[in-house]
Every structure is written in C-alpha cells, then in structure tokens.
Image (tube, rainbow, N blue to C red):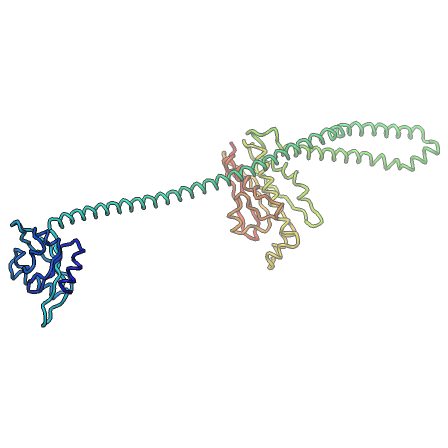
Length: 460
C-alpha cells in the first residue's frame, strides 16, 4: 500500500491512523491524528514518529521492529506530544502492511486510541456487557420459570385429568350401583307382591282343607252306617258303588287330602321364604338368624339345584354350628349369599355342560370325574369367638386361576358370557361385607380344586 492509497482509505475512516516505515519515518496520516495532536495535517509532513512521541527512540524502534516481524497485530502504548505542550497516552495497534525486504523498508499501519477514552469506553462496554449478562440471566431465569410453570401446569392438568377420570369412573360405578339397587328393590317389591297375592288364596285353601277332609269323612262314615243297616240296596246303587270303586275311594280320599295339605304347606313355605328373602320391612339393623337367611336363599335357588336333563342334581351339604343372632342388614346379607351361591352353581354348570372339564384338562383323574358327576356345594358356619362368626361357601368346580383371582372383587370384571354377568355381584358383596358390616370376605381357590368364599362378620 502506497501513502496515497493509505490516504484514500484513511480519509473515510474515523479512527486515528498513521502509516510509518520501520525506521520511524511518518509517511501519511489522516485528520483524526492531526486533531489528537492539535495540528493541521499539512504540519505533519516530513516529521518522524520520534518527534511526535515521548518514548525513547530505542523503545519506538523495538516496537516498530516487533510490528514488522509479526503477522499478527501488535499492541503497544505511545505517548503523544500535543501542540499545546500536553501529552496524550494512546493505546497503539500496529500491523505490517508491506513486509521488510532488501530493497525497501517495511510499511506499518498504526492505529491510535485515547487510553482514557478507551478505558472509559471499556468501562462502559463492561457495564453494557454486565447489563447484557444480567438481561440474559433474567431471560434465562424467565425461561426456566416459564418451563417450570409449564411443567407444573402439565402436572396439574394431568392430576386434574386423572381426578376427573376417577370421578367419572366413580359416577359411572355409582350409577350402575344405583341401577342395580333399583333392580333389587323392584325385584324385592315384585317378589313380596307375588308372595302376598299367592299367600291369600293358598291360606284360604289350606284353611278349608281341614274342614273339607272332616266333611268328607263324615259323609263316608254315613255311607258305611247306611251299608251296615241297609245291606240290600237297590241294583242301581250297587252298580254305581262298583263303578266308583267305593272301597278304594274310602281308602284313597284320606291320602288325597293329606297330599293336598302337604302341597299347600309347601307353597306356604316358598311364599314365606320369598317374603323373608326380600325383607323389604328390614332395611335397618336388626338381630337375625343367619341360617334362616341361607335357607331362604337356597329355597329361592332350589330350581337350579335340582336335576335337569343336561345337569345332575347339585347336592348342598350344610354344616351349621350353633350361632347367636347377628346384628346386621338382613336383606343385604341375603344378597351376598345369593351372589356367591349363584356363582358356585354357574361354576358347577360350566364343569358339566358340553364336557368342559375334559376340554380344560384332558388328563382327567378319577376324582375329577367323580366331582363332575357329583357336583356339590358345602355351606359351613362357625362361631370364632364372642365377637365374630364365619360363613364359608365352597364348591367342587373348576377353580380359579391366579389372574382371575386377583380381579375377583373389581367392578365390572366378569368371566361370564355377555348378557349373563354384570361384573358387580362380588364387588357389591365386598362392599356389603367390608364397608357396611365392617367384616372380611376372602376367596381361596386353585385350578381344578374348586373355590371357597369365606365371609367373616361381627356379631354386633
């Protein structure tokens, strides 16, 4: 770069710039340098760098040599002598433009900067940097706070969603329970109504059977007396006596009335069991005989226990202990007995229908075949102590695997076909025993070994 090219470049730059040779000759300057020295630019022509600075010639030569031999910018310090006699300490940055050669000296570009102003600018720059750092920190903190707020919001939304889902599930379950309770209530009212309507005519028939039997016996006795005193009856009477087989009629009519009496008594027992099972008038706590509730339930389910063309009879084995009356909600306990016994019957029917046992376990043993041909339900009661009793209901059906066993008391869980089970029977039973009566209900079962439900309830 020639001095002329330098001047063309330096003229448009606001920074103080000097072009010097490696021996200190001042080749060109721009106006900012003249302003710093308090001179006109024409006055700088022909001067050397040594005349403008307060440093020794040796120090200046060493600095210029360092700039000449370095490919990087060399930082230094020069003290300028101003025209008014004052000095100005400047920070200098020297860079070689034309390296030294045997033919010519090196050309060095010096950039000067007022150290005081530079320090002020440096302080200001540091302050700006600090402010910028603080702003960056604030933004970082704001971003972290926003991120944390978003995370907390997501957690709260997730928690709220979970809570809403749980509430929805509870509402659905409550709705289903209410529907089920309404069904049971309607069923109880219907059963009680039917029992009442049946009971009136049956009571009328049963009450009149005694008098009908007495009247018929009186008439037959009169006939016998008539035959004794009038042995020679007209031919028409004799023919009619033979036609109706009077001797057989006299013997059979007593049996007939006795059979009718047994039948009406049986109907009365069924009606009483229906009324006791529904227990619409016993919604409050009262002392009851647990065995009576179990027997009433078995009476209701007797049609399913009897032998049918596809099923053998399900035998019920009762092992009742001497129990005190238990303070409970009788209708609810009857519902528990009904649910568990119905499940036992379903399990036994599943064992028998279509030879399902051989499908589940082809290696059928003699004992398993015997179980299949002799299905039974065992109901056992026991007095544990002065505070607790247990009722166990066991069947010799297929049993329950571990996966099903862990979900037995879950709402809406069922292994029955669609339309046959709601999945609420054991769940409601659990609530009745555990929550309402503060008792316990457990199931013990292994595949192929049948199932046993044990109900433990307090006496008071």
